[in-house]
Length: 203
Image (cartoon, rainbow, N blue to C red; front, side, top):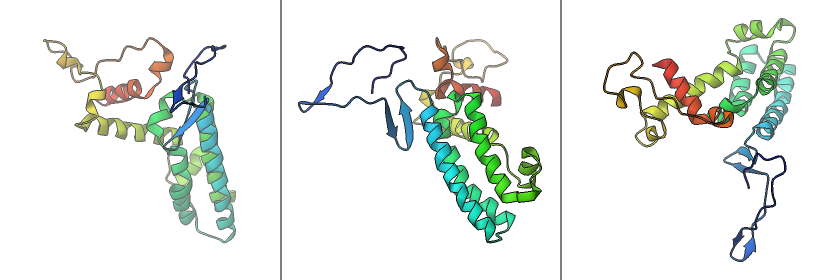
């Protein structure tokens, strides 16, 4: 896969392994995450939405068998929501507002099924079911991931130095991480700069 952002990319030179040309692809799935050659998340998130939406049928069937609201919420949290949150730290920083709404609509549909005529609004349904929006959940999951990275002996080196480690004098934000200099917006909305911003919010 050639990662390129050109509107008209040049033809790629063949890459051989054991005298065989490797196929050139515009997407590849790694550990369940679909990476596209333009490094956008459109394809991956459309797959996520489809998988989660298909699971909503299970809620509809169980609703007909008069399962309680609490049981339906548990099933949603165990079988549907994890599909919408798989590998969130990898892609959350780079999704668009329309993709945020697209994912949120899946949870709205689930709550409409679960609550039936008691569904009045999305905010009311979230409160009634003791749930949070998916956007809030993603941020919490990313904060946890960033903190785990910070505390890890192996992966903390992926983060930049703290301010106090680069200057000799005391500063108000000495415990903050140095901002990563990003020359492109594409880099700015990638995972590591995003984790740095999250950690600096906490410190």
